[in-house]
Length: 195
Image (cartoon, rainbow, N blue to C red):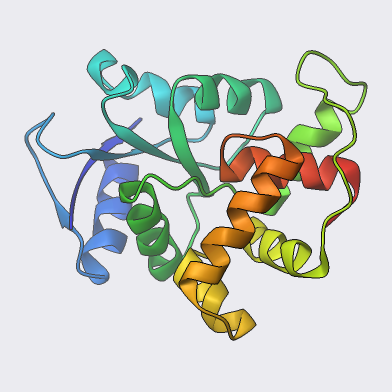
């Protein structure tokens, strides 16, 4: 696996690159050579500003590392195509898992970031939707593991079922919640109090 690392400063870039190398991920020095870009800075907004504009076109899969997750900046990042967000202090293994998920096109946003985002939107707004139908116990269990960032294989192992079953449960749950992606499903379920 190869990634491009963009950072607000060279020290942070070196730290992120070292963590990635520790878990076998190669760093590409030339820009625009790989689909996954890791952008790091103190804030989400600054991490995005550290990326050259072509990375923000939707052709690349973005993973943002930051220390501060301002809800407005998180929303802007999601609109810009960011697939995953983690703290800059995340362990190398967690970072590697997020890189792999991002490469697969999955979204990975830690629960605490989603909760902060939802608290900021508690008054409702354009993203509000009708309360979703009650979820089955299996859908709730899958959703809780999705909220923790588990990929389908790990969810299947955790629930002692096949990956195919997990995919079916996710499809049914996303239809029931009227959402288009995993991050939105988790956000909607948290807002409705299902997890």
